[in-house]
Length: 42
Image (cartoon, rainbow, N blue to C red; front, top):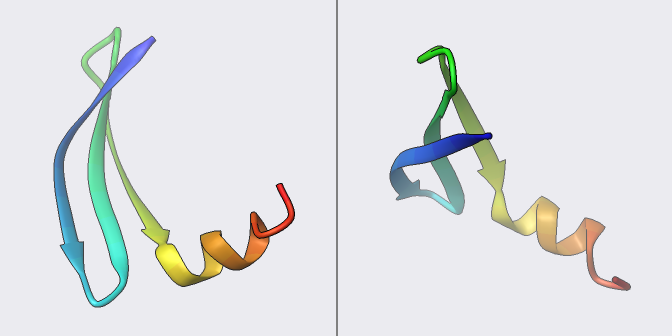
């Protein structure tokens, strides 16, 4: 279980930090166009 915090949108990408139960922080990026293409048939 964790939390996604501080989302930012820039140039078709979403960036956010994920904080887990041990307070470890990870940074993620989602390319919206690529995500939509990969999930078009879902």
